[in-house]
Image (tube, rainbow over the protein chains, first blue to last red):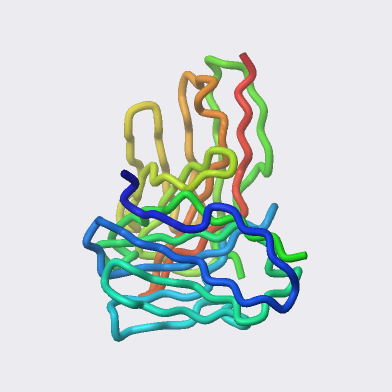
Amino acid sequence: DADVTQTPRNRITKTGKRIMLECSQTKGHDRMYWYRQDPGLGLRLIYYSFDVKDINKGEISDGYSVSRQAQAKFSLSLESAIPNQTALYFCATSGLAVNTGELFFGEGSRLTVL
Amino acid sequence: SQQGEEDPQALSIQEGENATMNCSYKTSINNLQWYRQNSGRGLVHLILIRSNEREKHSGRLRVTLDTSKKSSSLLITASRAADTASYFCATGGGADGLTFGKGTHLIIQP
């Protein structure tokens, strides 16, 4: 089984719908991240969490919210999806401060907003 | 905004040749990391080089870091078809997540 699991892997939805992307990890890491990838733009950080009580905005948090339900679970929500939120979304974890360690990524959730 | 910028954006070489891609960044860093992404898949960590290191090796990978020029290079020697992927540099300098470049798309021709 994958260490970092994202669900759903693919989702097509309509403008205005609420969408939740879920991430769970078995690595026992405290730090979890949500990134968004658009073609030709690399990855951009949406939100990150250092523990259950700690949530921080990233570079592009507008239009998104997150919930850290447990050490192992970190969900990303789009309250009212819009077409420019069509992208590939990645969850990642780290066991150390990122200035000393690597990120472990899930396989991604491809979201299409019509 | 992107911290790292990879160059070239795309690279196509013959199997067996060496592939070199470069990364430039703007602000001071604690470390620089390289990741590989196969098409549509999650990123996989390749190598990390700290700001006080100049060169690091891992198998067929060689990474250099020049903090005075704010640049790094990734060399893949004796390339294989399985090396076809996108390669991203990422910088860490603060308490939050890594900042990724836009990537170099590498194609290894058989």
